[in-house]
Length: 244
Image (cartoon, rainbow, N blue to C red; front, side, top):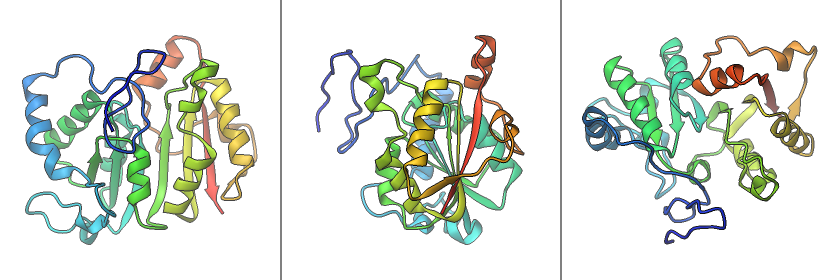
């Protein structure tokens, strides 16, 4: 499809089938980052033009991804990649899929991958819906959705990533008993998400104490979005939803 502006002046990404709104790119990339996007990203990019065989996501000359990393997790909208990179380093035996349409965030992830020789990450620089639709059933052991854009205005809420349809997409690719982990600093988005989780037959929310959503889970790596929330006086919430 072509690019067309909506009433807010924001443009959806031009990839066929995408409904994302917002900027594709921020400030101009430094030369090093431009070179990474040009030369490294093609080796790590997941092709969603067809059904994704995770074993086919190869880094040049490294062999099948799945042969080295039989367990997989996905982070949707990894932003500056702080959490994604931290998890990949903490768990070198797990394969991580990272999805982020904002090219400046992708460049940050590539810089960390290149600078720290991280080989258990593969990337998709587009709409997570397109990636989810092409992944095999029950192929993931965890999905992260951390500080997604809240689209706070009422007319914008249809753009929020959390929806009944997208929860069904995530449920299809998650193994039973595994978790969707969600963090937000926006009370309205927390309530919005809980309402849809409670309406879903695919997920269960099973908190035992208030700490189960007021404190982050073990291994948590703070992100720039969380740090901004703290600076501006907002209190994040951290949710773990179990795939039934």
